[in-house]
Image: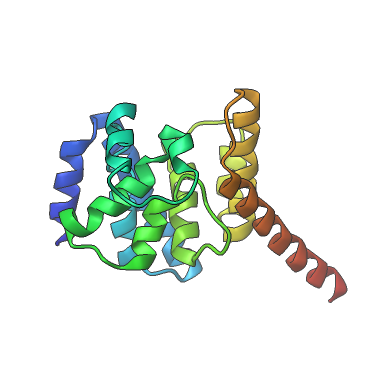
Amino acid sequence: MAEQQIRERVRTELSARRFVHTQGVVDTAVELAQRFGGDIEKARMAAWIHDLAREWSADKLQQFAERIEIPSGFALIPALLHGPIAASLAPEWFDVHDEDVLNAVRFHTTGRVGMSKLEMIICLADAIEPGRNYPEVDRIRQIAQTDLQFALAESFDSTIRYLIETQQSIFPLTVMARNEFWDQVHQVQNREEIE
């Protein structure tokens, strides 16, 4: 399906505010893909689809989740279901079957261990698109000018701090992804110190 058709279908599923956010994610994902050697077309596709089910009610998300296979634990935090649900809708609605695109959509809110470059790009683009406004966002955007993994590690830390401050559940995959990215950042820093 052509990008314009996907964009228009997504527009019918989202409020004007959420659609502006999605456009911001598309633009940011393209910038990140260009900067870090990612697949621009896949980044555009995943970015358009990522929040397809974001504005569904908790009941609708739960009911739909019962009919599909979702990664373990997602049902415990209903707000996280929109990623796996959007990934499950993409093949039927948009004829998107690329597993990397689907995983980027599926895990864009949580991250996971072993993220592909596309998954990292979509996760970070969602966190730093121009409409985002939270205390650390400008610092993370600055880091994202040169280091995708470091920016993502900082983004996960920011998310986890927010969840702790607001006494919300922290999804285990997010903690595991955060730890993996910090381990990678520290390995690079250690190598640079040795050289």
